[in-house]
Image 1 (cartoon, rainbow, N blue to C red):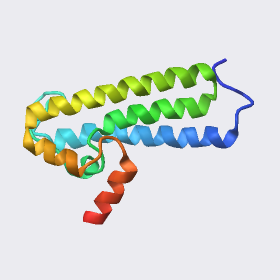
Image 2: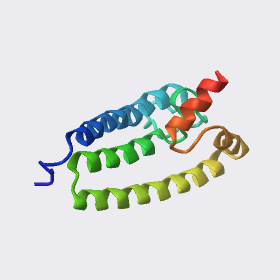
Image 3: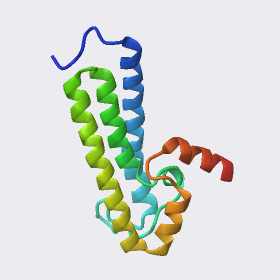
Length: 137
């Protein structure tokens, strides 16, 4: 099947840890944006009217895209097959292109406030974001 039985077990375990991390980055934003994003009654969490830059959004600008990147990486580490690796890397490339476009959209929506946010918080590099967050708080 798609799973490389003889693959390295340590790499596979790392893959499952990355998968768990991706789930956190994927689900937390839904709750955060509903609570802090000025979302209208009965509207989807994506319809924010306020720039949210606290909590998870003080660490990365795009936690859900970060989740997607981490999920692709997790599947590569878990499967340890060429086909999944190539597919995963292509997906990661397309997602990153999407993130760059998302930033442009947010600049149009929030203007200079978003540009200041971009200088402060990394796109998807949550390790750098965490270091900056801990240094400033």
